Length: 105
Image (cartoon, rainbow, N blue to C red):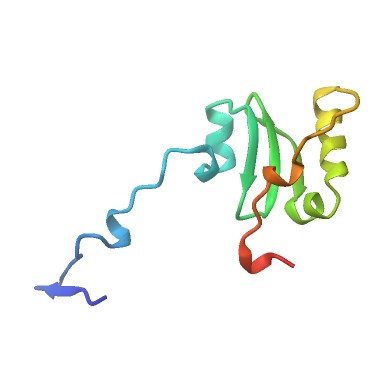
């Protein structure tokens, strides 16, 4: 894409990244924003390639997605420890994570 320069000012064409607005979703927020809104839930951190458990604005647990994919039982154990549960069994623990195609093995 070519920017047009008019008298020292760059005229930015519509539809470029400069007019992009980040989605208002927890997957796009950083840790300080999640703390501020006191987020609770499971978050897939695609930058860190991990899945996080947040409770009331605190990240209580985090695990690399490749570890979860290799052994889903480890993720079930983490959920059990985090929420003080016994005998946690997820129907499809693989569905919690989504590993980008370029990292699939």
